[in-house]
Image (cartoon, rainbow, N blue to C red; front, top):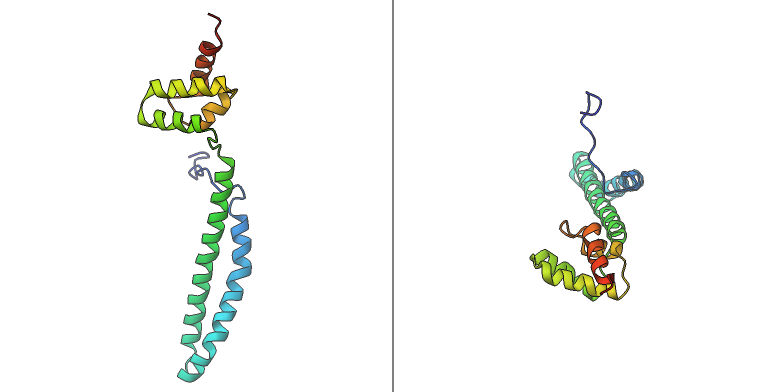
Length: 149
């Protein structure tokens, strides 16, 4: 507990902290409730009861909220995916596959090839994105590749 009263907040994937979703829900839910009530009004008149109107309007609002939240979640995930480095180089993809498979020698060879093609150790470490291949270890391979014989 950070201040003794509340547990520390978990890190959020959403950089806006949910403010965009809250805004979209503030607009969509009342409109959906009103539309649901308007559609359910003939049912209520036919049944001579007001309860189906409220129930149908609430169901329409709930479905709308679910759809709006799913759309916003997709937008947030696309922003996260766009910010995450992707190995565009086929050699980096091969090095990542080798690292994930535990084949250190194959990963080392692909990293050396990427270094010789001009990739930086930071780009390679970000492209491989594996805990056994941090920037420091890739930098050691760079020193080996650039060492005079």
